[in-house]
Image (cartoon, rainbow, N blue to C red):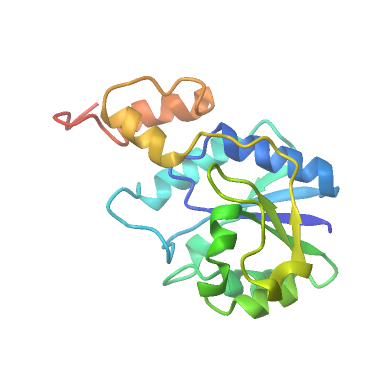
Length: 199
């Protein structure tokens, strides 16, 4: 496996994303991890989704000091809903000599059978799964079991939902996100505390 594909809404990207990407890279020997912000994620509510240009800017800040992390804008450049199978197909066509693996959380694995064309995804790339809090480490659909590899990363209680709710409540998000992301959120007044309409 040469490249780990790490897709997500990154709303915002946070320290658990960094730890998972780093440990997966180390454990599976990825040359690089490509972070792929979703333009229109199929499984997310859009109520709390920051505009894609902000999520892209934050993701660029997160990966900036790691030379083996890079950001791919493939899903942002493609119109419509960001289906993983289309991203994997396109990247394999562009890079025929590269072996890709797909990084995803155990919560996503639980619903993987409901994704768009999951069998094709699992046929094309191995699934490198990191544990999320409260999710049992098992493969709920046996047909994918031989395609799953688990990441030996610590289970992190940090989530984008928690960070957004702390921010809206006017509470600190320091150390939950890198400082470059925290300053960007403040500068752009993302996820503002209720009653605040400007920075």
